[in-house]
Length: 171
Image (cartoon, rainbow, N blue to C red; front, side, top):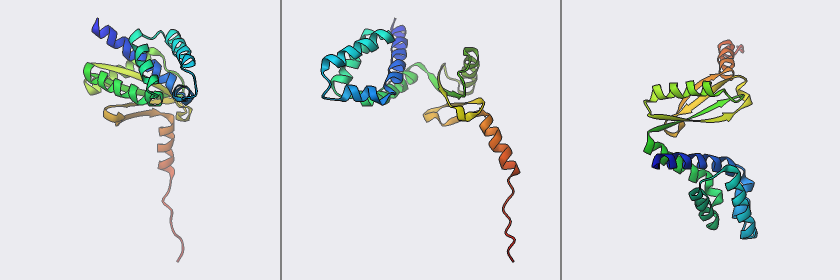
């Protein structure tokens, strides 16, 4: 039961991370001129639409009562760090131009698991049209390891091969 509750809580935290990524949400909750009833109504709406666990909703109320909604992204990161350490989980951020298929993400997770020896791998996805095509994967402590399978990188490599050193022709 405990691990099911922990998995549900980490899923809730990921939902809150996405919701509070919009600065306007945190600003609304941290604004002292907004009546508590309006904040409560929005918390209830978030809880219902995101299907949050009751203990997550209680936690959210405590954060908001203490005007700390602006810290939610850091709070979520700290929670995930503790969760990952507790469960032997490696987090990998996959950035691509379009949303990758779940089987592609599963293959990337398996590859990261093989490289790191982690018991579990959690994939977070981000979109970046500047990659042109392909994807990148960041993993490891402080996301210090990087796999670049993007077309942008290939173009940069080809471009650098054609760049000639500048020659000064003045005598």
